[in-house]
Amino acid sequence: MTNKAYDHGMTPEMNHDEIAREHAVRAMRFHLYSQVSQGTRGYFTNIVAPEFEKASGRALKDRQEVRKVMQERPYVQLHLSLQRSVQEVMWNTVIENIERQLPALNQRAKDCERKLGSLVLDDQLEIPRYVANVDIHCMPGGYDYDADHPDSVAAGAIYDRGISMYQRGAEGALGLSVIAYLQKNFPALKAKKVLDIGCTIGMSAQRYCDAFPDAEVYAIDVAAPCLRYGHARAESLGKKIYFSQQNAEHTNFSDGTFDVVVSTILAHETSTTAWQNILTECRRLLKPGGVMVHADLPQFADIDVYSQFLFGNETRYNNEPFWTTFRGMNLKAAMETAGFAPDQCFVDLAPMAGNEGGFTNTKVTTTSRAQGAKTAPGFGWGVQVGIK
Ligand SMILES: C[S@@+](CC[C@H](N)C(=O)[O-])C[C@H]1O[C@@H](n2cnc3c(N)ncnc32)[C@H](O)[C@@H]1O
Image 1 (cartoon, rainbow, N blue to C red):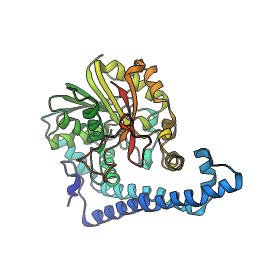
Image 2: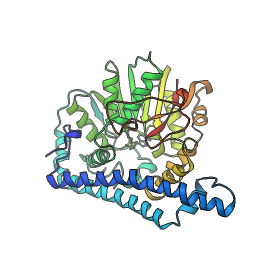
Image 3: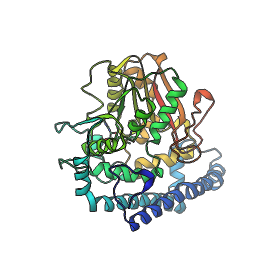
Image 4: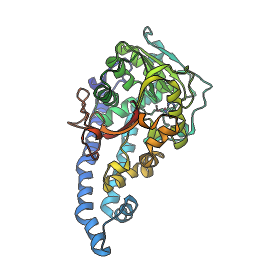
């Protein structure tokens, strides 16, 4: 039995009980991130913040103060520990399903028909610490899990199933938000060579193939198990993508190869130094007049103080070491340090696909700061940084 919502040639098999369990975890997550989360916001706005103001004669000033007054409350402790538990339950659900069929999945990828794109792996590549040493967002083993196995697709399969629980089947939704942004802001763009960095299993890259049918789409990642899975997946979907295992900080592409360089939610999973290196590399790789867009989480300056507290918990309780630092970074300064001219760089605010009207893989709205959005109105909004 398969889950039709995200069917492709590598889709892991799921039995009746596994599908039921996945639905239960999704429902639990949805309840937590809608009902319970709103409850905690209400608790903060109507009780905790007014109590603080009454006692101290002033409003709470920043997320550190919010944390101080919130974390001692049993209701908040329950909410946050539930969030962590559901995250662990989610990955356990995924892991049990993948483990029981991993040899078959590895074989399926090995045997996949290869007639469109390509896959080039580099077993000498040093995996950066921020990938190798972190079970990012509690994903067991992280992106290069089982990397010592020469045919493993483990991390790719785990990620695919995990994303399905996060996004309810809207695979590639992040890529769609970049495409919508490009179409709105660069209507004359004719891409010939597109590079997607930190592609994982190529969900967004697949969307770039559709959006730019005349372009060659290249996709890089450091994690071989994700790339093996992504390549087999793309071939089965009829998407021509040239995958290679490379560190985006220093790639082997020639200067000025690409007219479009993009990434989706890569930046906040790197580090301050790595992100700077990646921007410098993007500059080297872009053709004159090329466009770069990186879509990621909204900055702290774009969200209210309660959301700052809530999202900051990702670093504390969800193995996202760079998440908080990234949200406070001066993104424009980083691009300028990479050598881009100040008037080329933009830092905008736009919905990540899936925000408005729920997670959908067909419709992306593109209200941006330039078009009047002042702050991110809720979960699902992100920053789009880049050069024009
Ligand atoms: C959150 S995932 C990206 C999701 C993907 N862009 C999508 O739209 O589905 C981050 C990915 O970036 C990769 N990554 C992190 N640092 C990297 C680097 N320096 N070079 C290449 N890939 C990197 C990780 O291995 C991981 O697969």
